[in-house]
Structure formats: C-alpha cells, structure tokens
Length: 198
Image (cartoon, rainbow, N blue to C red; front, side, top):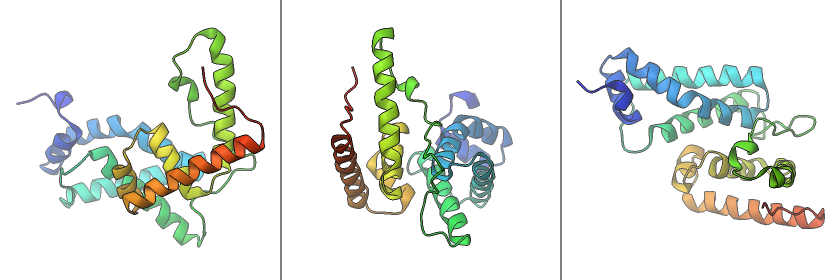
C-alpha cells in the first residue's frame, strides 16, 4: 500500500471517499492555510473568516462523502470554488451587494509580500515600500478585479482555475485582470507611485 504522504491531493480525496479518514487529515493540512488566506482576504475579518473557513470544510466533507468530487483537475482549485461559493452565500444572506467589505483603513496586511521577495538587504527596504503601495492601490480596485489579482498573483492560480472558482468565463476573468492592471497603473501614475521592484 502506498504511503499517504506520497499521494496527490486527488488520490487522497478518492481514498477519503473510500473511507480512509487519515487521508482527509492530510488533505486538510495541505490546503487549510491557502484556503483560509483566501477567505480572510475577501472578508477582512478574522472571526468571520474562521466561521466561513469551517463552513467551507464542512461542505468539502459533505461533497466528498456524497462522492461529488471527480478528480478532473486540481483538488485545491475545487476547494477554492467551494470557499468562493460559501462566501457568496454568506453575503447573499446578509443581502450585501458587494463581494468584499472594506475595513476602515483598507488593510491588506494578511498578504505576506516579504515572502515573495528574494532580494538583498539594500533592496528589501525599497521593495517593501513598493509592495505596500501595491497593496494600498489594490484595495481601491473594485471587488471582482481585486479578487482576480489576489488569486493570480498571491495564490498562483491559472485563469482557468480563477474562472472556475468565481463562476465566470475565462474571458471575463482575463478582462477583470486587464482592467485591474489598467486601473492600478492609472492610480499609480495619478499618485506618482513607482511600482517597479529591484
């Protein structure tokens, strides 16, 4: 029998559907931080993110136990789509008409830009300023554009995965990214902000 740790997420999902609870524990440990980071980014509230994250994993468990998962793509993308739907359902229940509730200061501090940098000590200071400016500008984007930017650059999702997760066509996802980049460039230009990193 193959070691669970060497199995792909898709293989682990199939094992869990066949009754191996240890397989789900490993799936959870592999995917929880990525999914929680996404939920927290969208809702901007730790307590609410915890609730929605737990709702997401309850739905994942129910779908797996009901054998509603087919290993046709990445398991993590399937989970992200469920998380997206849980968030959308929660906002519908509140009759909110936006995806993201902005915090008072539009803080994106939950994104660890430093982890993305591989730079010398001299360039880290200027690069951290650029990332700070990017986060600030990103916060000003309309919610659908901001969501696509986060998924693409901070979670390295493909446009196909983004489209599936957000229930839109690939062209719509690409269009949102295009408008996000144009808007960010315009805002940077209007505010004399340099978005180049060393």
